[in-house]
Amino acid sequence: MEYNAQVKNRLKRMEGQLRGILKMMDEEKDCKEIITQLSAVRTAVDRTVGVIVSTNLVECALEAEKNGEAADDMIKEAVNLLVKSR
Image (cartoon, rainbow, N blue to C red):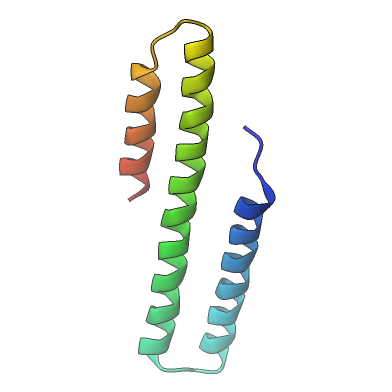
């Protein structure tokens, strides 16, 4: 699977958020502010996992259809990946 610029930008944004959180910790910011930022990063990670899995699933399903194969196993695997990521 090729990862597009949108997915890479999401990860770069998360990287920046994590650096910001470390800076907040160094500055001894309030726990509530840090938890809020960590929750935002977690949400961003969850959404990125969803984007990657769904994009890959679509690509694999189209490829299976083209080859005359059933996509059932791939769909089950994708759902399991999403469940494990939570």
